[in-house]
Image (cartoon, rainbow, N blue to C red; front, side, top):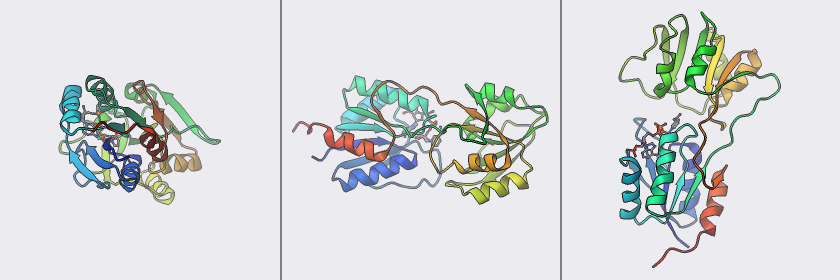
Amino acid sequence: MALRVLILGGTAEASALAGGAVAAGHDVLTSLAGRTSRPALPAGRVRIGGFGGPEGLAAFLDAERIDALVDATHPFAATISANAERACRLRPTPRLMLLRPAWTRQDGDRWLDAGDMAEAARLLPAGARVFLAVGRQELDAFAGRPDTWFLLRVVDPPEAPPPLARHELVLGRGPFRLEDELALLARHRIGWIVAKNAGGEGSGAKLAAARRLGLPVVMVRRPGPPPGPRVPSAEGALDWLAALPPPHA
Ligand code: NAP
């Protein structure tokens, strides 16, 4: 049965789901936040930009007569996930989270666990050269470490200079390969990595490189997801869609 499905996207899993859901005959609309200038566009229809909080999203669900919402946003995109949970209660709509599994420590990993970015910043030793792989929205937490040199990798050049006293910027869009990560770490004489535990393969190569080189990694834990059903993959989300009751006429 064809459903009108809203996918909250911005991840590889969201794009895989959009492709599968279109192939299954659903009417698929993917929503992107608009953070990158040239996003890879998934199958189906696409809209870009915020909704205006949970109330705005609830109104959107109503206006678009959405039958089901799949929140396939990044594991650290906590605000939109909380908004989706609230919106689907305001305008009762079946909601699923597609949340890829977190990375787990492997033999040879030297991980230090951090509960948030502020703790990650405190864990870095004085004078370290750090690959700060946390995205451009999270840099403020490291502004108080002028003793530390940071390598930043961003998809688009930032509009404002990063709030870091000593840093270098490189541009890059995943997925990244192990050889390239090893070369990047060597070229910049990196001694430490800070990463968000995003999970997935596209950004996991830096961890394999750190393991190979014996580098310590400060791994920031994910925020807790909102309550409700969750699956780890696009296949699980397609099964969930297939099992939903048909929409009212
Ligand atoms: P966030 O902090 O949870 O959300 C902030 C606001 O951005 C939301 O309140 C919402 O605005 C808007 N928004 C977020 N995702 C949206 C979407 N898919 N469609 C429409 N509006 C959206 O989110 P974020 O951490 O900035 O992430 C933004 C997007 O980038 C997400 O789609 C996420 O999947 C992707 N992404 C995030 C990360 C990360 O590390 N956070 C990494 C890779 C990709 P309104 O309240 O106005 O609706």
